[in-house]
Image 1: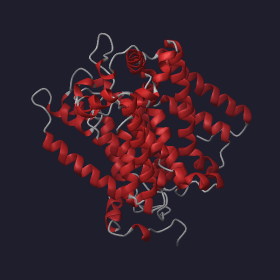
Image 2 (image 1 turned 90 degrees about the horizontal axis):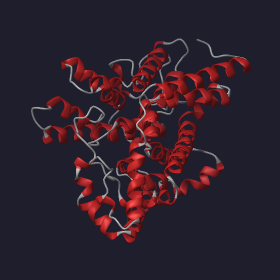
Image 3 (image 1 turned 180 degrees about the horizontal axis):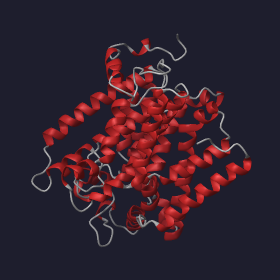
Length: 431
């Protein structure tokens, strides 16, 4: 279907989409009642009243604060505002983070395709709000979008060629360092900087994360000791590993073996090692191809897979991969098989991540179909990790290039080039 070409048509489409999204968010009973925000808000209030951060549990539950002490320090301003003000501030921060994510992930595509900017951003904003990880992040009162925005800010600093960015590139790593100090998962992006040889950015990110951690230890030495020696290792604080919302490699293993036995730690560790090896190889290839956003996207995917607990709302880390996949399709020759295949997989992955399909198996496994369905988001993550196309690699207009989702030659082409050093990548413009 062709997009509207008149202002009136664009306004009509935008209005219709906005009404549909708003109605869905209001009437479909998927709201999480600010559960995590309750934990954050209660924790900092309890802390200010003289309690210990990791002693607090949300009333009626066994859920407490699971982040490093620096996160509590950042959230401390909530202790001086009312509950409804805390909700409003949380949602405004999420909106700001969403705007930054959309800009970094899609602005180059919008400019290249010469789309009307306000219309493109309005449509993408509606589609963004429909994603289940985004909906859950907002309704839980979670911090995922803020962390993703911080990390992607470094991706922008590492790739933007504007004069302002060239002056700011010396602080590349700041966003990653802050995100890693707030929550451990983004620390994998420091490893990404190391394995792709951005040592200055990796060093700066490490220094920022370390400095923030030291500040938190200075503010509350007891909380820091408790976190790093006890709370960080206590998985009971975050819930059952087999719960269907846990869409990680470990969650899939737990659902496979429950209720007969605990998932094998050896099998989990071997799987994690293999996943990390694939990630390092593909991330290095992405940077060699000149596709920094794909490198960051692969790192977010790997983080979701190897983390012991990846709740559905954590899957906002897949958003950059969806953007890369769709953009790779749009770059391909109009009417070609590659274009159709890439856009199909981008649309199918997006639709599944909007569908809440895994919850159909919340109460029972449903046998083999249930195992497939309850791990739907794990399959998406695995597929993207293995087959995400790189946009800087020389593309075949209507065939299977080295990193094509379209067929078996994708993997074969990638393996054929796996041993080349980073400096020998083929630029997109080279014949």
